[in-house]
Image 1 (cartoon, one colour):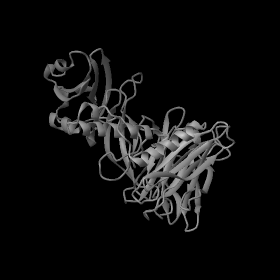
Image 2 (tube, rainbow, N blue to C red):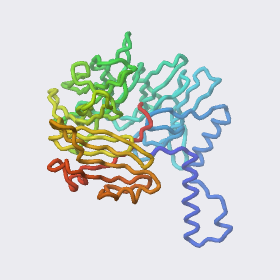
Image 3 (tube, one colour):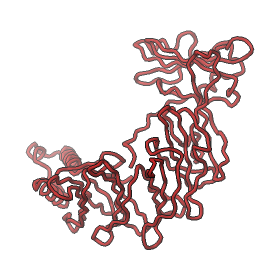
Image 4 (cartoon, one colour):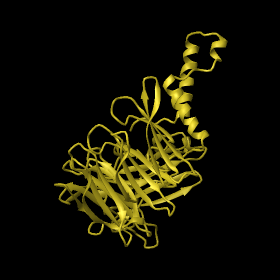
Length: 437
């Protein structure tokens, strides 16, 4: 992702750099406290932005997506020089939304073009070369008076913005779907009955054309996330995760075959599972995207809580699938354990917590009562360092606020040992997201 810089942040950074340079050169006190001078081109950009604000414009930063600044620096034409994209709202104007593009000319930034619209806000903005000519198009998610969300695609190559597309949408992904090296566009929208439809657009040499459409398994309200990934044969695919109100999840997997969007598997005909806030990803670092399906551990008591193991399933273009890894995820305490293959129906778990922390105990199932053989603890109390190593426990990881340790019992002979637990134990890294486009 290109570096996006708000002009005030850029000014602060330049100030810091110049001040540090003065310290290193042994400058006098008078020199150190003199205001640093911005490069000429940024002075001209800031002056033009200040003029717009003085005339009644206000910053209108996007509210979602990865580009959240009101002023962003991005190379739109591929010449190595960043353009400035500034997003404003002029409430008194009939076309209140304004997107200004400034280009560097010699030592100054000059206005290159302006995009105007009747929307009230910009939901997201993205910059993608959709026709392979080296120019990035502007993809803007916009909202109107009735909170209707539309996707507008603009080309800037001619110096006058050309609108290639305006369509209602819920989510979209700009990715190479057919493997030709060019970015395509998949737009998810609602049909007349609020069910989700996927539209596939690609450049046909003349325009951004709608190539095909297909129905998805759920409603637009159930859409949760789009994940771009890879099938087991190396084909590009889009994984559409949907979650119902009762917490059931399913994934539609889409790919492009001979210019047509098609499904590898649909949630309606595929596998539904309990949603545990996990999304498709490369679980075993083999370059293939896996779908995390939750499967309940056996219950020994109908009144006990239900716990789940995660089966990471990868798919081929044919729809055939296989599980390549199973894990237990303790999201509350931030750790996971890769499970041995023979544990599937032979082991169950329970979870407990106290003022000292929490523990997950694994039990061997058999004809008699379940037999505990391993507990993994997450100690968070004041005495966590000492408690973690009591009673023969082994420390697995020390973190600033928590210490993880494991305790083995006699019932675990042949199921798992200390070295295996150390190798299979891992910390869950919280995923940071600014929302989707």
